[in-house]
Length: 360
Image (cartoon, rainbow, N blue to C red):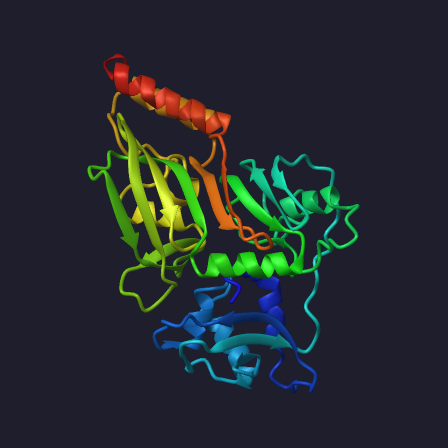
């Protein structure tokens, strides 16, 4: 049910590949679990797992299956097994999963709301939300461990508590954190059932002609670049993803848009906007750090470089967040200001759109 699974580390997958002459012991431990969607089409289990696991190649997954480490509904399968709707796919090992120690760190947090069950945080750009490969300290989870250090019921290592959803390191905006297991279960179901209300602000390359639109396309890891996600329009890979957008302003060679998430996939807005030809401004991973639209004049090129310096990250902010309170049943809605770097960037493009003859 939980759609916010941790990404695997490359060295952990290596551990799955045991020597051929070593038999599997009786005691096995589950390290990763994925539940196929109700609408899952028949798909080989190696493709199913590669699409969901960072740094995992089909060859490694196939070797893990040959070693008996890939289970479907509790039974070992080979790599050509076809995953069906609601299949439970697990990766097991002969040793417990290595746990990441969550160290409390005194890192300032912008808390916009808090009660006994949850809190809402406005995350700054540049902060990783959860410890993982290459980022074991300085994350929001470390900051929460410090902030809630005097709460005897809050254990930062307990998966039943904490962040209910995530946003990318260089995306700013609102996140909800559960302080009680019942709250996380309730909120996770709201995200899973697509009843939460989330709107983002994004500055994208190019002038979008339509005032609004709907983007639908399965999103999964790009087999050519495991650090990127991509749209699979044929629908036989990836997970269903839907983004709605509305154009707020057209500014020279960029557009300011509001995006509403119907689903919550990794890099969803970034990937969907690139898919329709409007990559997020200064999104280095997806090519938005290049000058994708505009003129060849040197003044314009310098203007864009100055824009990159003003907002040195993808121009994306999780502006609003709405959900039903897990205890009171009251509808909660939060709105956050666009942060300074992105606000200055938008203002600079507004000025350009008015006075662009000065820059050509």
